[in-house]
Amino acid sequence: TLKPKNFTLLLFSKDPLKYFSGSYTVFSMYRGKDRSEPTAERHEITGSIVKQAKKCIELLNAESYTFFDKTNSHPNQLKYPTRALQEAVINCFAHRDYEIDQPIRITIFTDRIEMYSPGSLPRAIDKDKFLHGKATPYWRNQTLAYFFNKLQLAQAEGQGIPTIIRTMREEGCPAPVFEI
Image (tube, rainbow, N blue to C red; front, top):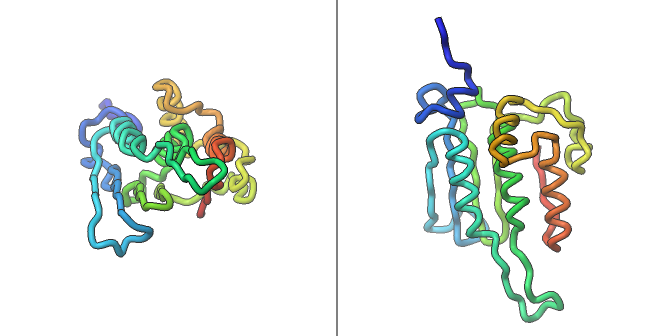
């Protein structure tokens, strides 16, 4: 009997939720600095993980704009580099633990963007090296990383975290914070 592999269902099924209860994304936007705001915009994004990733990138692109501060010596600054946002989103999908029934969560506040990818850091990765973008590449879901690479959404060479750190620094943005 032929049966599809898990990665096949995640990549090509119209409804991976049938097979993996946490395989969706909650994308929320608050017009303040915390979740106590009286209103928020919330999107539950479903479908294949490629479709979800592309939709998240599309929604995040609205946050990648230049803002003007006339009191600063550098009045025009990019709020969030598009490249850093894309890398972070793809990392959420490629490296999450799909056995956990929680969704990926992307939450936008006026002063930051938080991304939560279910699962812990694999034991093979040194936490301190990871936090500084120096960890040896390790793929929890090697086939997913391969497909994201073939779709030109990722390099599949362990470059995601270093690229996020470098891009944020080069654009004059605050350093990203990683919580494990």
